[in-house]
Image 1 (tube, rainbow, N blue to C red):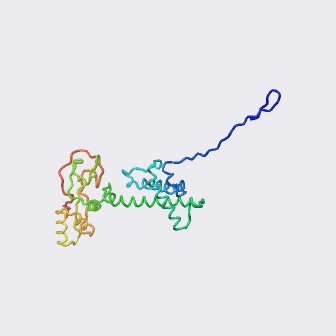
Image 2: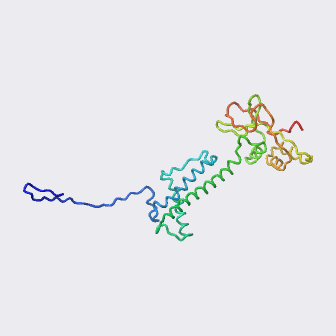
Length: 259
């Protein structure tokens, strides 16, 4: 800063300067420094996690009861980092391209697409597992009598269920949760035209022995046709509030009295 005294003599004041370097890190990311891909490595993993969560929400069923992954949580690095490492190694092994040495805008696009693809694949695997373990065994409103028997077979359930009263009519309780019940009418079976006595006897014994697998096999073969027994309550499978006491159990199947 320059100034002058009363007689015009310039006065000079020197101000010293100093230089320093500040380094900021995000928890956990400094562990990735040996790769030289600290930020870039997070792109495919973060995109994969976001894509997976979006796909899971669209699928609805698998999202039930599942917690989301908070990408702001340091614990999310356990999911994000392995995806990034996998993409980096794949680029190195397949394309012979080291992302530490050169990264172009095309590379960034590829990283985003890789993250989306991985997220979709993981969501598809998640859905397949959910469907095999839960979805194919879950009773739903609108299920036909055939589907009810098929789901009982998949659940290794019984042909005898507790009952509940609706509008004066008794309904089978197929499944019960904390506050909901899946109920249905009884199912009437009718033998196919021309079915021989041996097959009829085999089905009757399977029903009496509560052999759901044998009953379902007969239904698949077309030996019997299943229909809902008309009643005063809601038709088919219905989702109701779990209220009231359960009545004694009874057999789901009954032979069509009109035959």
